[in-house]
Image (tube, rainbow, N blue to C red; front, side):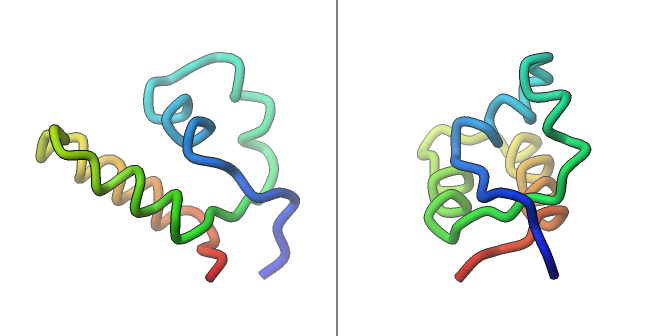
Length: 65
């Protein structure tokens, strides 16, 4: 799969929070690193509902290993 850029963890958090700043970038295909996945889902205080939403977000991205 071709992707336009590799997103970092804060970018993914902004998407999750609905930040308008990242909206223009959602038109592009982007990948995420395994490290970003771990940082997102490994947060100690994560709620189950947040984990479900973040897992869905991760699955929509191309994972760069």
